[in-house]
Image 1: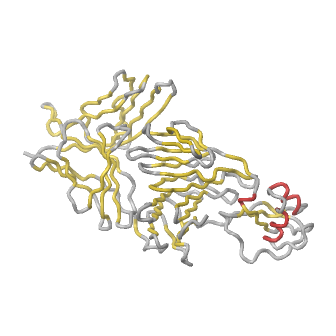
Image 2 (image 1 turned 180 degrees about the vertical axis):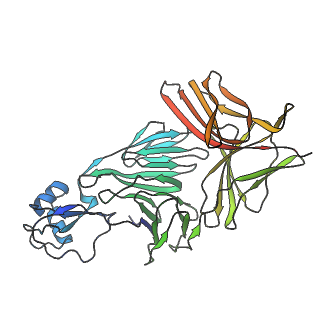
Image 3 (image 1 turned 90 degrees about the vertical axis):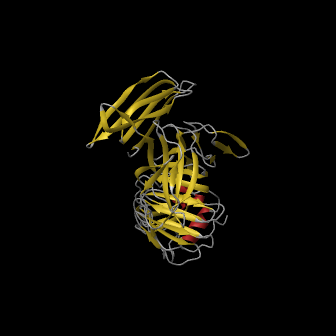
Length: 439
């Protein structure tokens, strides 16, 4: 299948294995890429026929490997010789992914022609398709240590989940059909398999890097955003790679042309709340490259469904209703090319003044505990580099309301049992901004 007009790969050495044996002919003029082939270094006593029988599938495998590596005498290999084995013909065992977090009940798992609701703790295999609806979030842990975040609106296929005998980590290929994926790939060395994210017009590869890939099925643009490490990127019709470093991003247009590398937009932190007649105007930090602000909103800290909207950067961000209960927002700054900042979690409220505490406005926050049993809530506030406990106790009601919080940064953890008795844990954080009416 043709995969479009864009490729991205981590700028790391090709995979090389072992030590090697025998006398060799000339190596291939152009070594294959490590995402499609595995390299093996011949050790003393190795025979090509035995290596092929151990690692390859198919009756024509010996001829295939001999031709690929230009081996004219299959009974004699030089120690130290590097051989290449095509990944798609190697023997593999299956590995799996597990759903570690799911914020809604509407996400779908599709296997072939059948579909069902995705559930936390589901074990997923190769060819699983996941559809995450708007306002929902899911995360996966892949066998071997990597983590995949699936934000609102993502559709992905776990195209390849497998391990071969020559590489320490599993080979992973994720097809991103729409939306975005957030990735934390465990550090991988020379004896590890590649971790790839493909879109209909791109392929991105990484070893031990934190990065994001986005694809818009309407515009057919791809975005690559790097938080840690360095990624090499190019359109498939381009000859030269561009190096995208930490804190940078690159947009590839639908025609396969790389745009200029950009610095990722700054986090859209809320700087203040101004009371204007019957509404509040949110002042937020932005840079010149930001074209729009992506806003997701909910009334409770652990809301399952968040409403979403995009706001032009030049348009005022106003709230018509703001009371003593905090409203929660997830904010991302977006460039014209679709590059995004990290997500900023903030809670906004109109401050409640206590007569005995002038100048120290407070507000209340809510947690949804519907359909949960044996709930335990822990909420802490950051003060001077340490966490101060606000609440750490069981909750009996269907909704938890923590009253009288001061402005600051909070972290929360919910532990509970679902209706079926299975245990679950949810975590989050937010910055609480308390607005006050100026006299």
